[in-house]
Image (cartoon, rainbow, N blue to C red; front, side, top):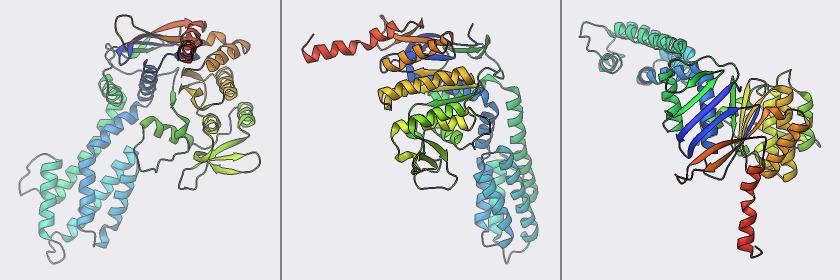
Length: 435
């Protein structure tokens, strides 16, 4: 029995899908049959389950926004005062960090410095605008603490309460992360997918972590990291670009920045190098186009963004391999890997996938339209004696509901996929007049 069982009903274009995830699971179907919907669902389902603490911290960071504004406004209000230079330093630390711990600690230090500043200047009406203190008092009392303390409560006392509240937000996040409740997980998963997941159920070793009866998210064992590749064009784009990108694109680029590890499969890396006649690497020095570089065997170095799309496809796998992301606990989800590849490279790409699964234990979930790719996966897996680790599924349109598809398991028999693909030949005959 497969450790991962997926059940989907009435989710976007998917009428039904019962998928037992194998070492290499390949789904096929026409455009708009729900393949990408399933891929994104799996990516975020595993990502949020494996990174529950970050999800809880993200919610806490939203709660810190009023405190962020308070610290920012106080540094701006009294920006001419040199004493608050250190406070501005801690505000920048908090603002630039993605760590909840560092944010909370930096805000608290900044607030302590603001309180010290108040103690020194509260009675000095010549240098400090008295109305400014009164305004901050109102902001804290009403907008942050949500109460009206009365005139007898000093501004310093109110700041103490803000510091206490700030630390309380961190303690609450720690408690939520420890409990691993389903409500927060479901809210975030449904939010990122922008759809209802009430008819989705995913289990690991028989224990559900997505589904109606789930109360807490178990710590996953079989899949501990998920990577989603829907286009190689995102490779080489760095995190400093101004326009918004998909979350899984940002996640992928962050993975590409991980330093090269000492232990990785040098034989697979060399095989990839022999295909693209070079290698990719992450350049720490910021460039206009990106940090990913491609170095050809003859010494030419160019931005990966300027290289051929096929080079990007293989460089992506090469970089993830060398920095240790691709291992036995990784699920690599790839949407139409053949889309930008020459037929010969389609077969090479399929061979690398089989090699990574056989030698490293990496799991793959792939959507494909290519007869070359489907055939290559099947027959290379057979030659490498890992055919039992490969499963194929095909999307068939529901007879009672147009634009809805049922995903059918066909094991390792790829003939139904070929029959679906061969409809294109019928169209050529129809439009070309030789039918």
